[in-house]
Length: 499
Image (cartoon, rainbow, N blue to C red):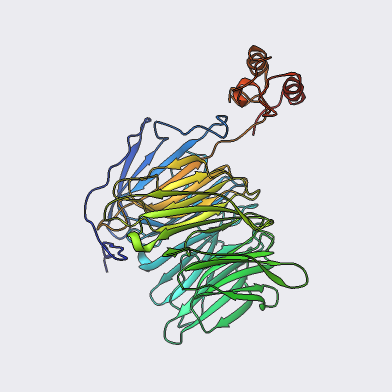
């Protein structure tokens, strides 16, 4: 039978129908049209960077959109990257469903695709390892759920396929994860007839089932620690942290309200979740202790929780549902000292709801990123990147609404995927982006990637100046003076090349 064409309308309270404005691109893009196996006419546009970039950290750095992939048929609900392997994996939904594999620093052209149209899927989700080439594809289709493994060498031929037991028909977009080294894969599928979920731990190399856990709730989210030894399961308003070797519960806690997704730090020692309030807990070695609690009037925190690698920093992004989802607050919290160190807000107007979708934090707790649907008046970019002081240091102003972002461990690369028009409007088509965040390189005053004679000359030209001196002028120790200490600091790194 021919594949069905679907239209999508996402509504929370109000709907506004209109057109989106597409940004101008400074470099050439190309459009590819083809007919797939199901007879669908598909158009995709592969683009190059937009025509302007944001200033880098402290004015130093090279950043901007690496590529933009626009597709007239599919919408990206799930996207991830493997920073060590320079790989991006895209789960494309709605129409012409498929897995797309790209080079993060490439030109936006898929290296290969795995066509899912014959399976007629409802959900297409992706996750990936970070230290080896391994992407996993979770598909809910025809009343069954499958998980497949792929890598660069194998191309569009799956390395393995795992099929859930009969009766399990749904895998949520965030109910799939991979350990950083690719050793294990965690996935959850739901059976609506029995209201049970099955959580499985698979061998990342073979897809063989290692462990399983049956729950009496809908597991809509799974996040593994980097080594795969622990997982945080989102089960309604409750977060259960389990150890994957024996599938035993280590800690359980609840927030107010369901619909959010729990997060787990890379070391597996801090778990956090949000709803109408938000909580963070740490494994102290002798038990789990609540290390932070927050709430706010008319605030929803469920979609915007992020943690640093060691759980020392938390990013919390909320929207105000009493003001039409138009007011967002971004909080940066030091979980070691238990204090909010910075915050900022945005406000918009119109009928579009600025619903928060995802928050991410770099491993070192220095870079914070979030995605929300955007406002009708385009009050702020839909994808925003902040430093620890909540200063905006990068952004992607998408024409529509992002549904997912993923940030590399080092905070250098971000990928985003979503819908080509606002989520509150009727329409097909999607957009995916790869973005390079400003790379701060000590001593590289002119931002050309090297600490060389030009940087030394720039410092010497400002030598002896006092108040008002900034990093680019040579004030490397930020004491307000360009002096001998700054010269010594530059000479100590002279000749280095920035990453």
